[in-house]
Image 1 (cartoon, rainbow over the protein chains, first blue to last red):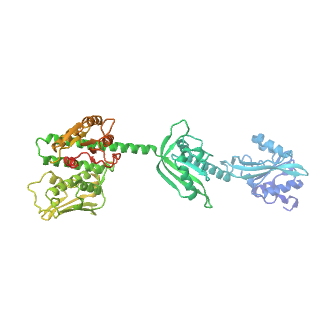
Image 2 (image 1 turned 45 degrees about the vertical axis):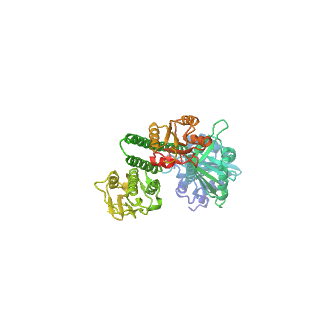
Image 3 (image 1 turned 135 degrees about the horizontal axis):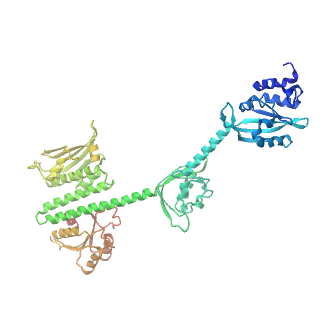
Length: 489
Length: 117
């Protein structure tokens, strides 16, 4: 193109070519070489910009646009819109844009729209696009010759902002609906920044946000909670409360409520390391604690019932046998019932589920009161209820026998009671030994033995893993049982 | 037995245990005075001056329990020796004055004998 008067149409890609080949003489504008300078400047700027741009020119609002803008138009508009009259192209939305164009054309200034959703068909596919755009006046000899539209596709920015807003809302909702209570306190006076629904329920639906803890929950002061907060705020050390009792009184008319709380006060640090507030988070475990207390009560009552029942059984037995049995038989019977009862004492410590072997042995020795005659060694090991009762009764029989005939019947005799856990391929095994020494010479009892020796021969888990040797220097008993079986039984 | 027999006030709300404990004390050669609750026990204490020992359960199905009865006996009849029994273990009976011996249920004749002698 040699004509320097239309150099302003150089470049501009597809739209530049269309502009150059367009028959402008058929429009009210006439040939491009006659166009006013301000229009040429604006068109050159438009064709060479990657921003979507659009021009309405003259009273007929003749249209120009660049490649970037062309991307926003469907086949129904492009290329028909080039050189056409604005009102014809935009008939559908003329009620919206007409007044804006009119405003700019009449010297009313520029318009500015931020992040407006204007759906477009970019590649034949409908697409939601957010635009920030403005209509600005183009000068023509001191008057207004046309309108320049500069658009900016801000969809990405819009979506980022939306995602951030949604994420913030989601976090806020999680915070609000969290099952545990959560509050944020700020500053040395512990001002509530926020408190979720669970927190507000805990304090009796009081309005706390914006108030200090001292002001919003005054009853917490005397119970030492503000002092704890002060400490966390000054030291930065978190405070963890477990089953902590707090008495809350939402207002003067309602009765105070006791709550047990598991909670944490965690200092909130700023990037520069200073403490700006305290994060409060926790659970109301009142129901839990009350259930435990009820269980404890039931347990105590059960223990009482068991022991009273054993005492009653004992009373019935002695009353039944008194006329036919001698004192020695009565004594053996009552002692056995007492031994059974003591085994239950060891069990109740663990809600009837298990007892420590150490405790069972100590209890048996205490019952007979000859501690100085014993050497006891062995590790702690939990036994199930049946194994607990078996061991307690076996020890009772061994004791009774030792007092009557064995090491404890002589002034100088002593007993070694030791146990250990042996690792076996089939699992750990408990090996318990009862060794008597220093008593009178041992004689194997006649016959199959009484209840006591039968009981001992049953062993710890009823399987009879028992070795009794009537060594002349003293009775030796060794019992074995798998640890797993002892805990289960 | 060289010493004169003890006169033991036995307070126990379970009839069978009361019967057996009385029997056991008499079998040991002492005198047993049964009472089914603390009110009756207090009446007996006011009427009889020969009681030397109190053997009482804690739970007595009555507005006065064994621990309160023991406190009353310590206050008004300080010469009477007291033994408290219960199916409860310590510390359920922690209210017990520290100088009063405690015997867990069930108990044997030997344990009662040891206390009386």
